[in-house]
Image 1 (cartoon, rainbow, N blue to C red):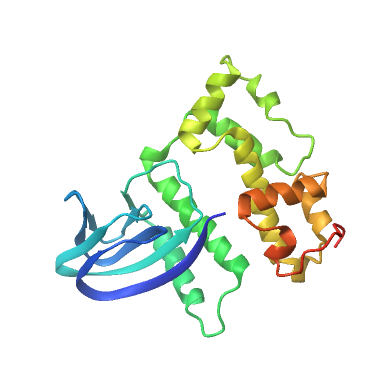
Image 2 (cartoon, rainbow, N blue to C red):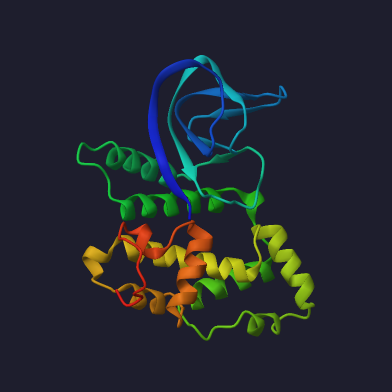
Length: 253
C-alpha cells in the first residue's frame, strides 16, 4: 500500500547535488523554476505549480539559475503504471498544492500525524497526479474492470470472471492488457484493493472497534485464515503484527 514516509520544504535554493532515494520522490515547485538532471544527462524542466515525479533509485540533481522553492516528499509502496520520471501540472484550483501543503503541516506537527491521516493524504496526492497527467489514461475496458473491482471488492462472492463476459474480447487478451496498463493482474488488483481497505480499518480499530475477523469480512474475505495469508503476502506481516499485537493461534480477536 502506498504511504508517504517523508515530507519537507526547500526555501529559495539554487542547487541540490546528485542523489537518489529508495522510494518514489515527488517535488512540487512552489516558486521559481528549474531543471532535474539525470545520470544519463537527460533532464526535465519544471515551473511553478508543476510537480516532478521521480522513480526509486534514480540518480538526479536539481538546479536553477533563478532559484526555486518546493515541497518534496517520498512515497513507499507505490506501483504506478508509468516507469520513468514525469512532470505533471496542477489544476487551476491548485488542489495538488493545497493537499501537499496540508500534508506537510500535519506531518510536521509537534504531536505527529496519525497513520490513517497520512494514508488519506497519500491517496489524495497520488490520485491527483494520476488524474492530472493525461498520459496515464487507461483503455476504457481496463478502467471499467478496475472500477467494477473498486465498487465490489467488499462482496466475497464477487467474481472477476463475470466482468470478462461484458467484452467482445478474449479473457487472456483483457488480462494481459490489464497487466500492461495497471502493472498487476485483475486478481492482484482485487486483492490489493481489499488489503488497502483492511489496512485503513486496522489502523482505525480504536475508533471503529472492529475485530480482525469483522474487518476481513468487510473487505471481502469469508475465510480469515485466507485473509491473513493474502495480507501477509501483500504487506509482509500478519494483520496482528501490523497493529502491533503478538501473533497467536486465535483468529477471532
